[in-house]
Length: 471
Figure 1 (cartoon, helix red, strand yellow):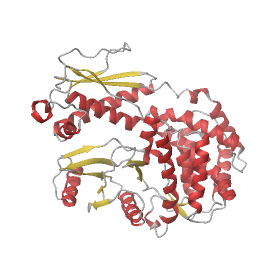
Figure 2: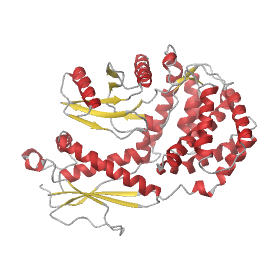
Figure 3: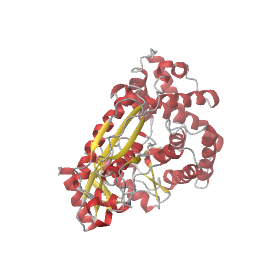
């Protein structure tokens, strides 16, 4: 057991009075933070390990402040004295982006977005009252320095690495004009900073909000722009307009809003948020070679095109605008919208043959689950399958299962990232056990759940290639 999991398990015991039965690492968060689901008898919590103590202090203080205001956030149960670990509410595995990816813009998804828009101004206005902004990290306000960081992030990681030539001084002059314009907006509110669909958990049919540790004092417009112009979410413009009007209505119930003035600056904040996102895609994709991030670029370019055509910010920015139009028209940047990789996940019985790959690519991964504890040997599970809750609880509680799946996730994630970057369209992963009823079914379901969450896929495992299940 590693030192961080030992500390988190100790926190879990102090909080719950029960021993941790299973400690499962969760998919990477994109930062130095590592999250674990810690399970005891009939109780779970999320443990966070993060060497950045100032970021932890901001998150835990903000969480307790927002909870005291009645806002839906995870409760922080305990902090370790080292400042590098804490324990919080387990809100499950569903976030708004995952549900949107699974269902499309269904009526349920639309209603969830409306709930989110209801809560956002309550974080910004009510939640901002009495907040300890001195804890904000790395900046206390979305000021000129913060804006220039974002714009230079865009310049160095997207513009330079995408290979486009530009007049640096002219671009800097436009950056200065843009920041001076945006700094005229009223900025006496809590700015959540990374308010997007992946940071909104759905538990019990309602939204809960996470990852606000980068928040600071700032304008209202930035967060609603972040939500509505989240590139991969790709919300239709008619629904964006509905949500924007709803947001102004909800915010106006809490403070006086001049709608005309609000919209004047709103479109400028849409622009700087898109530029910040492009910088992130460049950093993750061009620089870190995580090429699936580049697939968001065409969506962001479409958003830029719509903004500049229909809602041009009320400032002159000739060098920046010329560059953005070159991006919008670029076939090389548009080429990152490669065909989506389709991952097939199957379970099967070794009493039959290993499943054939109908795409002709050779079958991909085949994982043998027969070394795992077999619930089929126990009378209470014989008539059940790996899709049934009692079997799921049994297998998830076995340490061998967690070790096995962690290795599977690492191997498959590496392949998925590589296949996406190379434009491959198919990957098949198969899990086998003796009867194809318990262990293989469970593991296939867990991998599908993992890939759906991490890569925004829509995988339904295929459990048809099995021996005769006991009925």
